[in-house]
Amino acid sequence: MNYKKSYYLSQYGIFISLLILIIASQTNENSILRGTLIAIGIISVIINVLQEIAFCRCPYCLESLSTRTKLPTYCPKCGKKLE
Image (cartoon, rainbow, N blue to C red; front, side, top):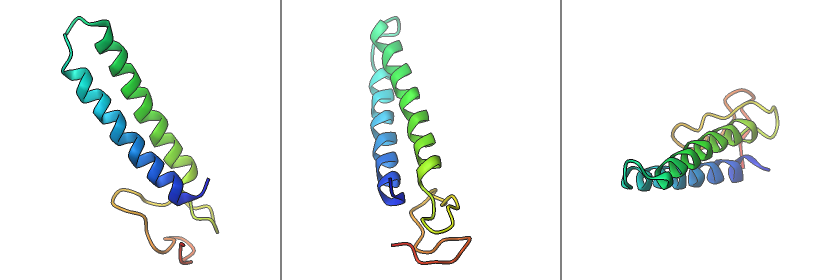
């Protein structure tokens, strides 16, 4: 998987996970559905973060890319332009 696809999949996945957690917070307190939605949301966030860590890397030197704001245009380690 290339770094751009990994970045966008992770961003969308985290967004969907947060929506699930918001929906879970609006359900009844003692509901089984609430516990299930919270578990699904947390597991989904963890999977998306791990996926981004594993695949969002420079294609040349395999250095991890910082994705806190947006994808960089140049690799911070080797300096090559990222397509």
